[in-house]
Length: 363
Ligand code: SPD
Image (cartoon, rainbow, N blue to C red; front, side, top):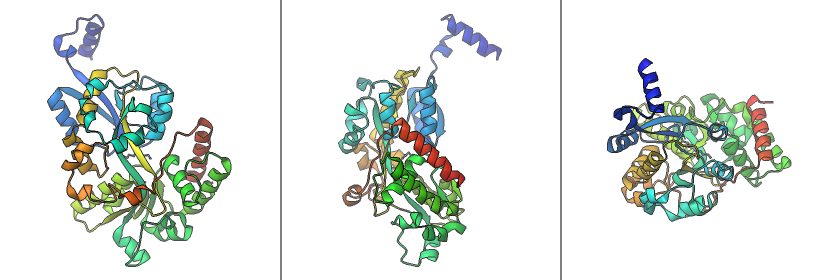
């Protein structure tokens, strides 16, 4: 304590000892289960920059910190439709591309899609992307629906009598108005980006009908829940379900996990690396972003996470089984059916949040 105080005083006076002055660090705020842990250790070993790493599992949590200001983070990972309004709110620093030589590795297809949120790709670089779909326990699905069970159908989630059949073995849903309500709107044949009360009301009514079968709304617990066999059905994010699949196989406990992108279309999302305007370690933030876009590092993350990335040069280094897995890198016919979300205006966001609270409390 005394030493820390002394260091603080010396630093303020500009006479801190060399060792204290030279400690370089970067504060990285990322989604949970969203990096191969060895990658950060390797970054530190190579650059000498220490990574202080925290995680979140909701865009709202990240946004609250960013809008309050002085989050203390140097690199954050907002999803496209949040990034869009956060850029408009002026909370990010324009990237210094001269410090990001690895941007030559980026995949134009993804950069183009990201430009919808960040025109000119000035503020963000894609980290990972993915889909919102259905994770399930394969044996339970066969027992419940028969040996030819097809899980790539939103009826399983949105038909009250269908989801009810999974109730006893455990159903989870993302605790995210931004993922669940658009899925319900899309199922009803409505615009997933609808902003009007009538359409959002219809999505709410549908969710309230299936809600009695949902054991928990949570955005990260389902990964271990599926892997251990504690739950059997989830509306979740693709890579988290692919990680559950891998963990279940490694545990050799007989649990087999499947992931399906429903035929009726699903959300495709982009999670991106950005630097808050008030970041204190801007050089280190660029160094981290650049490191994460090294082809072998991006490939390692994708192999570990089961999320596709926005780095084209990494593809030749991705395990064949992952690159050719159409639930990770969807084929063009599936891609054509995916929808993207846009930033909600404040009124719609408030309405969606109110609806979501009603759904979660079941009233
Ligand atoms: N465990 C990482 C999950 C990343 C999910 N990103 C948010 C997607 C929002 N639609």
